[in-house]
Image (cartoon, rainbow, N blue to C red; front, side):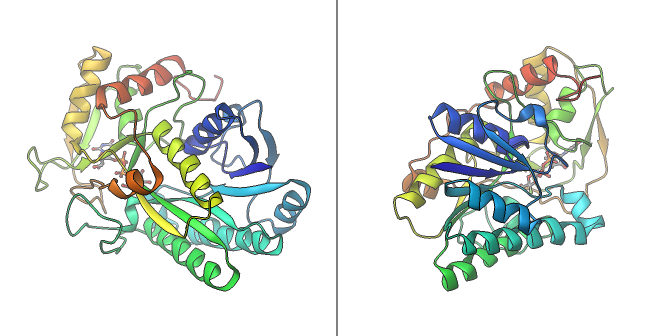
Length: 330
Ligand code: UFG
């Protein structure tokens, strides 16, 4: 039987496919290649270029393939864009998931692991954040992900589907092989943007706000390596295959780093001075997001391997240094 990975040509999806194939699993990928890259598709995976909103295409895939479970990454994920184009997020993230679930229910496929986000919490009531804490998203991206969790809950109630929602904190780093890594267009994430400076593609990094209530005034985030996220998806799928109940897990290292600390660490890794410049706050940024991932460790047996920021940034640097234009050939 195969694992169906939706969005398997994207950043976290492609890394999960690499880990699944290393673990000897058969993988079928569906990706519409709007933000994913064909070059990120593992050569041993079976690939369909299709959109999860296309019911006919999804039905055909479920009829043709022998799917034991679904891992769902196929969504839009830019916070800023979600605020200016909310309907794009409702369409791709919510409507897309609705069509997918309709097709899964029709074909008796009843296990799904999917990408949720720390953005479901909004401004946290405390750190580290527990899964049971208040969820009040401050942006449309987080809202659609929280709604996806709720959609799964009701579909589970009615049709017996079982799901695991994985709430990622700040995904970063690249695969140890150097073959795949982070590539967004446009890039909005802190670590790839910082690394554009030593790569000669940017003069300096803008620091969005230094007046937050944190020790150095810049925002604190919990940076988690993409391969550790990938492993958590496999553990979550196996948990469902063994009969595990619906569940929600945070995935982070449980340690926060400020924007300034991340820039400093990148200077150390790359040996480049990386100039920084203060800029106004970015709308919708909470001051601090740090995960408690105790639950994932206890219930899934998850143990992040990359818990050191320097090592994490070194894997990202290796990828960006050798692939300055990501998967695009220039
Ligand atoms: N930042 C800068 N300068 C930049 C880019 C980012 O100072 O040029 C700051 C941001 O203001 C933020 C921190 O660096 O304080 C991290 O920003 P990212 O854009 O890398 O990541 P976010 O924390 O905003 O968002 C990420 C994912 C979202 C997800 C969220 C959950 O991109 O999809 O984590 O915590 F919802």
